[in-house]
Image (cartoon, rainbow, N blue to C red):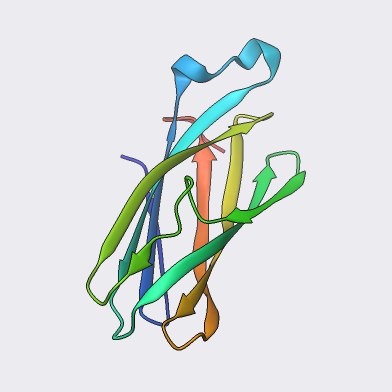
Length: 130
């Protein structure tokens, strides 16, 4: 069972679990494909909207790529207190191991912005030693 990354920022809990996807990977061509499922839960007392994302992806050679963009999977969810939002996305890597971390840029109903941190999580082959 893959480990779960979890962190809380200003009442926003972000949980991530990553999986290797062998049917979309092509190791002979230097491509390993990983999917990750994200759960965002508002445990705070204010309504927030997810505006954008910032990911930092590092492969096992130490190469880093930053990805920024509006929303997640084409959405900018609004989370009232107690609400949850879940989505699945993916990341190709040129190595069989790597890590990801980052943040979601959030805004409250009062217009205050803050970052909801995404704790580091591993992208790796199952049953492999990194």
